[in-house]
Image (cartoon, rainbow, N blue to C red; front, top):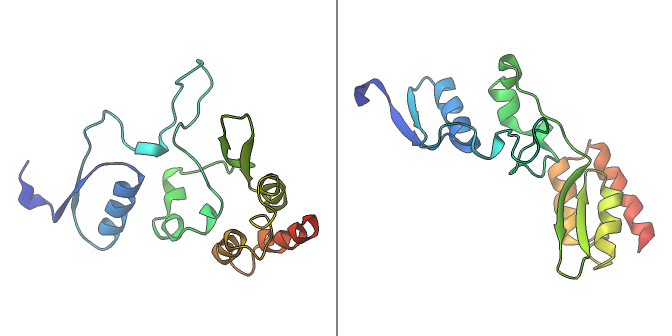
Length: 153
């Protein structure tokens, strides 16, 4: 394969490399994407790693706001059958003492989880919640839910 047939080389066919390649093709370039693994998608691959018939993504987390991501619209991924499930529980971290923090799609439930460790971080005025509101935009329903967290403090 002659390298002159390509305008650039992208090392890695994970979701970031594939997104970059998609934008380059959209711009009229011819990228060559190289991946050492036998599959593409990186952290976006779905497998049956534990129990046959139960498929999930070992690396997938934090889909809040994905519906607003420009690449979904720009690259028209739905035309190729792209879809995803936005689970109600986004992330969780378990500590040695058996306690945990859970980040939910529902901001009020996230506030309750955070409040067990820090009432300040669980309030909408905290840096954590301000960043979340900025990310989701003014028109998002999730932003109005953060006001309820104030009552929990």
